[in-house]
Image (cartoon, rainbow, N blue to C red):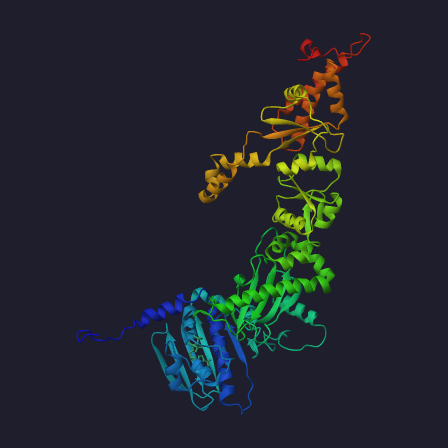
Length: 629
Ligand SMILES: Nc1ncnc2c1ncn2[C@@H]1O[C@H](COP(=O)(O)OP(=O)(O)OP(=O)(O)O)[C@@H](O)[C@H]1O
């Protein structure tokens, strides 16, 4: 640095800084309560460390007075001397707590930044702290400040015992914090893991009077204790089962996290995300909704974990994404997988309910984790045309193959299979198709994907001998409409003479290439999709499979070969049947009215041909109709 460059000290606009810290550091006013309770807790730890021999009753009491619009947080901890008020309470960025932790190594102390007290000014116009130190209990002082920028301290009458009362005169918009019902609810969650009893108002029972199953050895079955804790803690849904989070064995590169996870009863559909995880650090709630620590497929999981290795942000509402955070993510994934295995083994009733409630999401989960796939492959229900079935049942009913429809339900496949009584999985539902593909691969069974060309080839077998070209051409002209390709095949059931099968890929192509798609689909995705559908030909919109195993088709061909005049009429009847069935299956866009009229015409033509000259055609038919077209 040259002579000319003089070293200067950065100025701090204290008023501005205090304002920012007090009003913008925290996302919710409830954080102020948490910070003040945490300070009360630390002051108890301090008192225990500095004066272990004097017995006293440690407690924290939070009292609300809606009429006066005040909240008071009282503790029987170490208190502060007057110099300490100036040096720690009233100095932003400095606290006694961190020093004490560094000095003693005590890990129960929570405070670290010397900022938390400021949050009081985010909810209160005026903050009063009345305190007497355990070092000089006969001297009490009162700190008072509006806004935190300036403060005054005066000596007051001694308190009956060491300790501190922080009183908040609430801003009008935060008046609700004085409601003791609300305080009870919030503090029960914030303080559930604090070892010091926290009371609200004149309550005789602390809000945190809960047995924590991973902290103590409780008598009786441990699962019952876990369920009790989970039921008391869970917010929106009842737990179906609960299982532990256990720390990695010493020496392993894991986490120190302990806690409890549970499967929530609230139904999940597809990939609904109800993940709910509360994270505690040294007993204090740090993050109320740390769902990102849970795997993304676990939308049905709720839980509580505590870990001292996580690093909070300065607002202490979130966690640094460091290696401990990532280690905890891995631990939680393992804990869920282990917990689900344990549930399947030990709690069959709960397992059945979980499968019924979260079947769809578990299909997706199974795809994300091989261990889950092994657990779920034979148990998880798959939605099918005959209700929910396991993949094993689907395979057994499909004669050793799993059938899955790519279309969005209904359609010719369903009709065909209803006739054959084979269940088909609904491949359009979340995760069903990839799950079954994986299942078929691992269990070495056949998968028939209906709606794809290869799937249809499985269904519609090749005829023993191809039809002569001339017969094919006649059939195509008589039965197929534009865009339909006639395919001679053999398929079940024989009672079905023909079926119209839309080409799903051509359908997709039409949808993707539609100009309207620009408005519906983000352009990058659309470009990719169009690159894919460009490979599809798209000129064949549907295939018309003609069943050579069907007596009706047999009869038709015999009549055609014999030059029977009824052949054209019978073909007209089948053409009408095709349109009517496609309409019933919701997959055709043929003219239903014309098809119905075609049936009448065919019946009329056939009955008109009754021998011995008796006309069976009703008199009411017009001359045109009597002669057919
Ligand atoms: N109820 C209390 N009893 C005794 N001392 C207190 C109390 N509240 C605050 N203090 C003192 O004031 C200091 C500053 O408190 P503040 O909440 O701002 O920061 P902190 O708790 O040290 O750290 P953090 O910002 O991480 O909470 C504390 O370190 C502690 O010494």
